[in-house]
Length: 141
Image 1 (cartoon, rainbow, N blue to C red):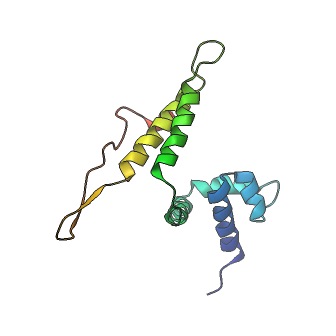
Image 2 (image 1 turned 90 degrees about the vertical axis):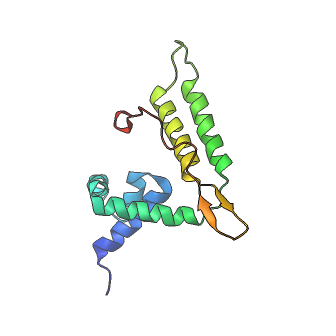
């Protein structure tokens, strides 16, 4: 069955958006109109179906990456250090960003499950060290 033009545009938008997270550039790349493209894209991203497609697309793309977990956590630590560093007034630069970085670190640590191979070759999944930050309300971030 041939894919409709709208479905092709949605697929192109999701592919571009998963690479750049830039709604405007992704909408233009998918050939949505200059004036209405961003609004159409934002409305599209609110639908559960599109969110599921985007998540599945991102998961497929990350399966092909061979990025060391330490590299990812190191990036989060750099963001955390900057977010907590003081500005001229002595206040942290961005406390909300610091919480997001901490949440990202814990998710990375929790997503990796260590496995032990016994003599019999059985693999047992272990419980992640950290799964979440207690009391962190992601809706307030």
